[in-house]
Amino acid sequence: MNESALVALYLMLSAKDKAEKCTLASSEPNSPWHQINGWRANNDHQQALTLQHNTDEFTVLVNAITKQKTAQKSEHDESTYITSINGVRFDCQGTLQHDQLTAIINGHRSQVTINQHANTINLYQNNHSFTFSQLFADCGQDDHDNNHGGLTAPMNGTMVSVLVNAGDKVSKNQPLVIMEAMKMEHTIKAPNDGTIDDIYFQVGDMVDGGAELLAFSALAEE
Image 1 (tube, one colour):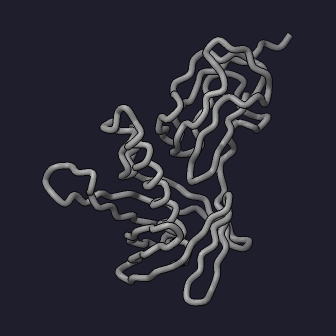
Image 2 (cartoon, rainbow, N blue to C red):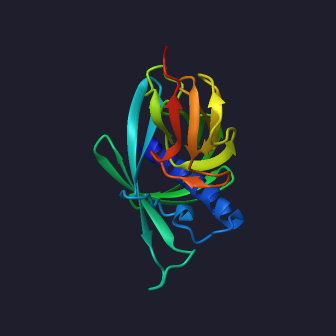
């Protein structure tokens, strides 16, 4: 189970690194959407990661807690991650340099090598290897999606492409927007034929998991 905590820490640090790069490139670096401490609009700091090891699938709950070095907020605030796996708590801190993760899990320091290809994550520790898969929520391809309303972000991520404009008529399964999360791109598609009523994010925006990405109206059936 310690390996699962290491993989979760790796994913959080990877996401933090991505957020830092987006912040530097943003025209509004002080926007709360660019905070790297796990901030989420109208919610606590908890995030859920779904991992699979061998045939076991499980959810990892991660809370990001920022510890400030000074009384004032600083971009150098240190973060720790409180991880819960099957009811077992892990206090996690670490640094990630390329594929080298230096971690402190429940006070015990370790250094492991981690590499990721698509949603497969390989962890190497003490001459042993462990392979995990990260599982993702459906991104709008399900035929049972709502026929009207909005399409939401499956998780925290960055908008990398907006393929439609407000007022466009679209066909079922047509790609609408592309998000990047945890080093993977997720294409959100039209659940039915319909019209794009409004778009709420632009390329480069950080998007909170569950946020409504765009307003969509399905074509009325004849």
